[in-house]
Image (tube, rainbow, N blue to C red):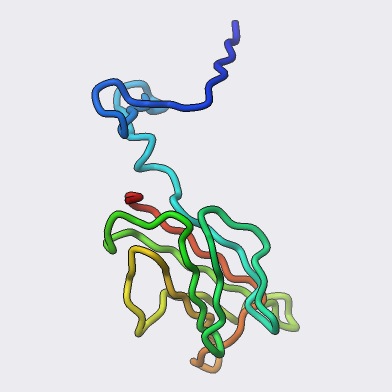
Length: 140
């Protein structure tokens, strides 16, 4: 028998911002809010940069060759969040020669995250055709 639950908002009973979800094995729980991405973006980092799709992004800035800043619509609670960055550009062999990294000289901020496109073969900053940035942590 299947069920359907239709709601506009979920609020924890013991703590409004905390909902425990029973894991697949049924013996442990995970926190729903901690397991959700708080920001993500997929953008074209070459030429005139452009967001392909995003969540919680208010702006995207091109800071120069391979250097980008994504501004959050809703700030993070602190600057100790986790960030994952991936970049790709297919070479003539159909393999990716470029990667994305967290801004090497940038600061973590509660309002934005910086990322770099990087060419692995030349060991230099490079504009990547595809850049993907994810942020996990606590919203303010």
